[in-house]
Image (cartoon, rainbow, N blue to C red; front, side, top):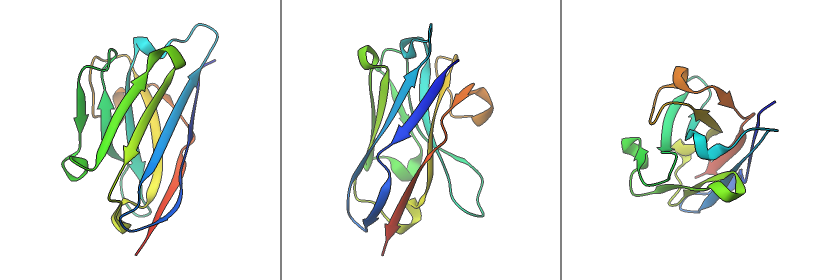
Length: 125
């Protein structure tokens, strides 16, 4: 069974930074075989794409509103993916999820097969 566990969320102020982690585990699961993405879900909104990283980590993709503020990275040896979030804004408040996709790249929720339970990020003004 594959587990993906997010951590690192919390309550911060505008302009602060947070680093989210996504730890993957499973008897035969290797995160190096998957593209990993971060999504977020704010109250009253659809779940939206934040960032993704290809299997090797060479290529990264970001939603326009996150470019320049968020950085996705991965450590395949540790089966972990990170999301560094800087210059946080109140509109970044959401539950953040990591997910794994067998696609080489995707920004679409439906193409992600394994999901974590999410970590809450709250940015106060």
